[in-house]
Amino acid sequence: QRLLFGISTLRRTMLASMMHASCSTTVVAMQGKRSQFNGASVQSRPVVMPTAQRRGDLQVRAARVAGVEIPNNKRCETALTYVYGIGPTSAKAIMAATALENKRLREFSEEELTTLREEVEKYNIEGELRRTINMNIKRLKEIQCHRGKRHINNLPVRGQRTKTNARTRKGKTKTVAGKKK
Image 1 (spheres, one colour):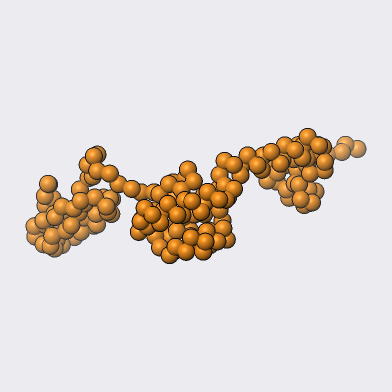
Image 2: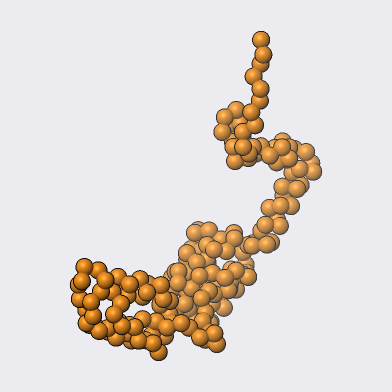
């Protein structure tokens, strides 16, 4: 444990904010010495500052659901939306089906996480959903329907205008030379 003496209040707050909150803590004692700012005296009060975490300590920062690490510090309904294919509506449906309370994921027990995982597995999500979407687009391209041709030419598929706008699909503007007289 190190003791830091004579550090200004500003520096102490900066140091405290830079240290990680979940680490173990060390008390830092302050002497009534002068700081470099306007000759003001520094308060003589102990400050609690975290020390660096050891390598061997195990810390769970994210729960794994459907092959995706979803954040522990968010509420379950919000955290489920981190999975591709689950939006706010699906997340609410999953929570209703499992009858779980919408609390932070770090507060969930292992049994609750297991029931959540089982319910999420019933949905078409992540790689399976991406594969399905790509197969549908590939099929449209192969049968040469209007939507398939629009996909091939990188143009909007759902009937949007292309004279102006549609820059997301078309890319950056390509200047065409004007007509000469």
